[in-house]
Length: 341
Ligand SMILES: NC(=O)c1ccc[n+]([C@@H]2O[C@H](COP(=O)([O-])OP(=O)(O)OC[C@H]3O[C@@H](n4cnc5c(N)ncnc54)[C@H](O)[C@@H]3O)[C@@H](O)[C@H]2O)c1
Image (cartoon, protein in one colour):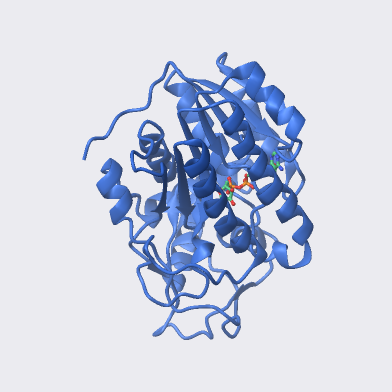
């Protein structure tokens, strides 16, 4: 394994920089001394105040430039590439969320397909040293073989969101093949942490607890045969991306896809109890959620988790943060940020 550290003298273009992963990645790159150009359209899919709070933490870095723009605006995107000449691009801007895609399909086509196509076109006309983009564990659809491996069959996405992410992998492969663009796709598995996404279950559980509302758990209340899920702490994700950045694929077609998850799946109930304990420690009293157990949702599979062997072989990295540590950091941030003491 020959792993190269990223070069801090380069310019990194991060799309979705006001988003959860984009913010933490941008901050890390800035702390290392890199120049970062961040793009985000600051949409209101979730609390805009949180996106602005993340940006407020990036603005003090002299090496940071923020551009409020939509990646589906091709002319504007081309201008950004022309003006800032990024060496390395990380495309994290996307409409995320599986459930939201059922009622709001248009935005997924706009941001994830047209927007990503524009990123590829921009990298074609303004060659870059490496394009890294966000794919998703949702490409595995209802596969039952675990752990999920990059070589598994993923041609049966079960949501439009998953279709757009799988399409991104195909489009990236084609552009890499035709125009020799070194490109890496990262299949993220549920990422959590402080300043995370309010639309995600762990965040919603905390909201519901402090609103005196019960939480719904879709596991039939069957703890013996509980669901197993993969949760990855944000710092691990950032370290994984950081390691990948300086190591574009060297294969003939310079496109590679990696799982970036935690191949230590957790029982759903263990994860929920850990959030209760973490919130309890943060507020200094016992926290127990009121729980309503519901049947499994159609298409839910007993276990989803990543094999991270390919990522480990490529850049020597495997996520390592235990949920007790990661969820405590989330809980501490949550109670302070929302003043829940
Ligand atoms: N967080 C996870 O668990 C997870 C899991 C799988 C995949 N992903 C993918 O990782 C990427 C980052 O996810 P995240 O959790 O940080 O999500 P996020 O929603 O917090 O961040 C995405 C950011 O992109 C911006 N954005 C959306 N559409 C845009 C557009 N058309 N032009 C410019 N900006 C736009 C949003 O305003 C947001 O700030 C996404 O592509 C997502 O699909 C995340």
